[in-house]
Amino acid sequence: MRPRSVMDALRLPPGRFLTSWWPWRSLAYLTTGGLLGMAAGSALVVLLLAGAALSLIVVGLAAFLVAALSGILVARIERRRLRLVDDIRLTDPHRAPARPGPRAWVLTRLQEPATWRELGYTMLMTTALCWLDAMVVALWVWTVSALVCAPLYIHDSPLSLTLTGSVFGVALGAVLLYPVTAWAAARAAITQAVLGPRMEVDAQLSEVARSRARLVDAFEVERRRIERDLHDGAQQRLLALNMQLGLARLELPAGSPAAEPVARAHDLAKEALTELRELIRGVHPKILADRGLHAALREVADRAPLPVDVDAALPERLPGAVEACAYFVVVEALANVAKHSGATRARVVASASGRRLTVQIRDDGRGGADPARGSGLSGLADRVAAAGGTVALASPAGGPTVVHVELPCGS
Image (tube, rainbow, N blue to C red):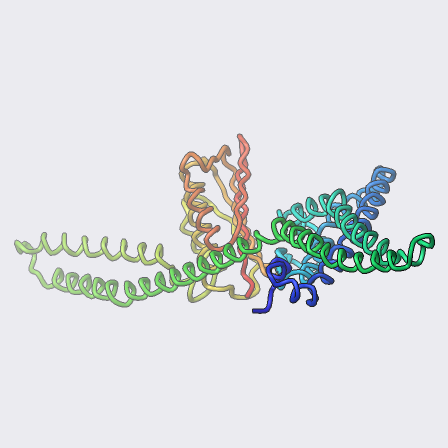
């Protein structure tokens, strides 16, 4: 079977190993590793010195920033170089920025753990690994060349002895290809240990995120089905029962013994119909499906127990799951405002920009909101996290309280 890495190649019979490309690929891997590490180290020294010398102006800060992000380029080259000694292909762990432009790219990269992991690898490479690579290659080249080229610079020894030394040098060079290849395998293992294993974890996390998104979508479909069944089934039957009881109540003569029980049953049917309508609105409001998030938020504001201003800049309809998540976040947040904040007014601001929906709920209450005290904020954060969004809470003592929610809404 064809070896897929230098580690597999080391298990080959000597004849197959020495006649394969793996020893020379190992030498190329170590040589380029030494050159890359020295070049990266020199560039880092220049950037750090420039940053320190120009730290009082913006140029110095830019030099420090470039130094911090230099590991991204080095790691990208390392992933490509790894193909010299291993057929494995490490994928890029960095995600695409939420918005276009260099500023969004830099902010995204600075917030990613992979960036700092790659910078740490770059520091390890420039301070130790590249010098070990260079030393291994230099020792092999010096040993082989010193013995093979002996006839050229040794003149006071018999020719047969120097030729024997040259032959021995070729044989020794072939034998030394084993430790050279072994170090190349160890070097590749170090690279994979720092840059590689988390790729599998990232892939698993990506699959978990995709599975969670599918569950959220399935839950939303099921919620709409329940709402439709309640609206078209139970609500219509209860409405018909309410009408029949009303007609029976009108037909009963005054003073009839059945008048009071029928009237009571009629009132209970009305109450049940009202509660069912509230339940349907809580499962999935019809206005949200028919007219979108903007109209649904205004209805929530109209039904709130305190004045609520709504400022929604939503030029088009968003995905159903995103609209539903944003709607119930606002409902829960306003319920918390009414119960716990002591506020006299609240404001809801919603806007869609690029591939993100931003919703902010602000009140003029006493502040001091704490998710650990069971105010409903934990459930709100869980709902947003399930949709792949983020929640930020600011609630200093004395107010105001601001809940800032961002939801991905791109394709």
